[in-house]
Image (cartoon, rainbow, N blue to C red):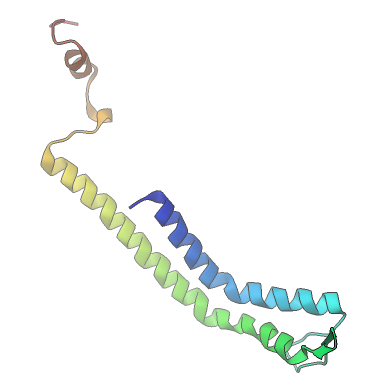
Length: 123
């Protein structure tokens, strides 16, 4: 699996988990910029460019409660993704051992010299 795909998937999971916070923060920013009151108790009138956006901002403000769902789902997704990455890593190691290919870090200095110049014969 390419590392770009791994990073993209992790960012997607994080965005899913944090999206309610982003929506609630956006509602708060818009309400503060317009000088409107925003709370969880009730919708207040918020006139922006001649239209009342109070109900929309109220619903967006309540969207933060959706984190009760998104954070546990994201935790499960991260656990499954981590197990899949670990399984793929172990599978690659097992396949490498079965094929007899040794990683470069495991070769000794003597083996490297012989592979570079077989005519030397001695060190």
